[in-house]
Amino acid sequence: MDVMPEISNAYWENFVAIAIAFVVLALIIERALYQVFDTKLWTQVEKILDRQLGGDFMDLKPWIAVAVSIVIVFNFKLDMIAMIYKADKPDTISLVLTGLFLSGGSTGIYKFFKRARKLQEAINQQEIAKTQVSGS
Image (cartoon, rainbow, N blue to C red; front, side):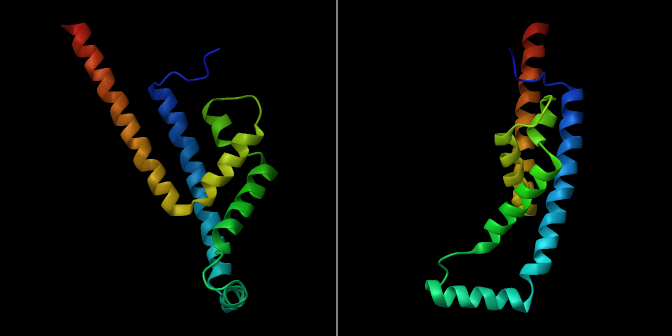
C-alpha cells in the first residue's frame, strides 16, 4: 500500500488549508500562554525555581506549551498528519507529533513553512526537468 499521496495541486491546496488552520491554533496557544508567562506571578515562580534548582536549570515554559498543546490535540482529536494523508482516524503518535508542532509557536511555524517552501520548489524543479527531458 502506498502511503505517500500524489503530489498535485489538490494535494498542496489541502496541505495549505490544513497548515493554516494549525498555524492559527498554534498562535492562539502561544498568545494564551504568553498571558500567563508575562505575569509577575510567573516571574516569581521562575525566581523560586531558580533559587531551589540552581540557576537556569529548568525552563518550564516549553514543557507547559507541549503539555497544553497535546491536551488540546487529544481532546479535539486534531491529527494534522491524518488530515494531510486523509486517514480514517487519528493515530496516537501523530496526535503527539501534532501537539509538538503546535507547541513550537510562531518560531516553529516560520521554520516549518520555510522548509515546506524549499520542498515544494525542489518538487517543481524535478517536474520541470522531467518535462524538459520528455519534451526533447
